[in-house]
Length: 128
Image (cartoon, rainbow, N blue to C red; front, side, top):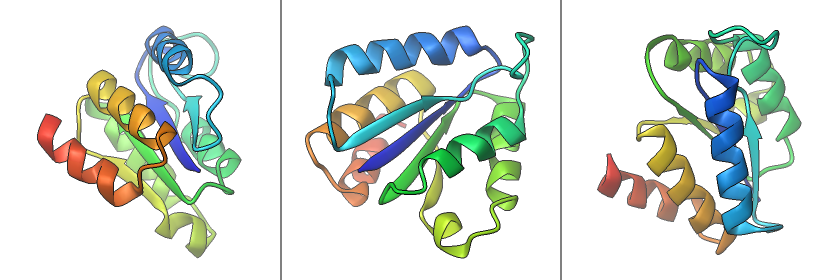
């Protein structure tokens, strides 16, 4: 199973994207998408600890792909990755350079069709 984490300054953006992805891929055993947008208290912003919590929730995934939108969303995702204290979990967590919506949507659809991380990353190179 591939884990996908959506990071944005707005929880509405990540929740809406998660809803769209969930509708498209259905209940696939090959992908699990989590929303980590906003600050956790309804404000605009990002929260590294929320992202870390999402990473930890996906510890059973074979790989965890993080998609962020801009600026501090990327910085907070990097900080969350630095905070991972489990080497095995850290080694399978990747920040993906791709547009948030197109990248995460494409990755989720591919993962739901049981594509590997390598196949997904190859496709990300085509949309970046």
